[in-house]
Image (tube, rainbow, N blue to C red):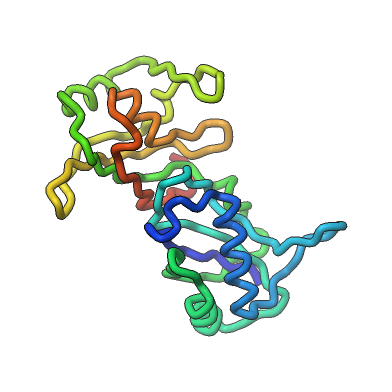
Amino acid sequence: MRLRLTFSKTLAMRFTGHMDLHRSLERTFRRAGLPLTHSQGFTKRPKMNLASALPLGVTGDHELADIWLDEAMPLNEIEDRIRKAAPPGIELHQTIELPEEAPKLQNVVSASDFVVTLLEPIDSLEKRVADVLAADQIIRTRRGKEYDLRPLVLDLSVIEPDGEGRVCLAMRLRTQEGATGRPDEVIAAMGGEPFDTRINRVKIHLGPE
């Protein structure tokens, strides 16, 4: 039985990295008593895929994970068990069953939508947004290698302030193997300080973008 879970990674797990989130989910499923399917080989691991890694410090409202079970179970029972076993910071929203032959989750992720809350203002913000969108190239250096950020920015705009009146940006960034845009890099390219932001992924897009 193959399942796709939609869940949130909330503020309580904001500083939990990708691998630790993976382990937290694995422990949650074990505590829930789910009959997890395991990989073959010397080191057996539960068969589980996450859609796309979140950078450290970023929360997510619409995270996706695929898991496999050895036995079929009612979806409402699975959801009830997971919710009771989940630690603070993981909130399950939905579980659906998928065909076994459905494409691997990571292979169909095309883009991610983020809302970035600016804790400190960026001067001439509207102009800096326009400059990013008008640029032919935005060369950035990450881990000692140069790359062009511009093709990874699919959309960028200033949106309504949050409940405390802080300015917010909406970003849609390409999220594919070898071509993943990071919201902190966009902020830095605009002259902002990524540490002066709160970043939340609000949606993962599947299929061609």
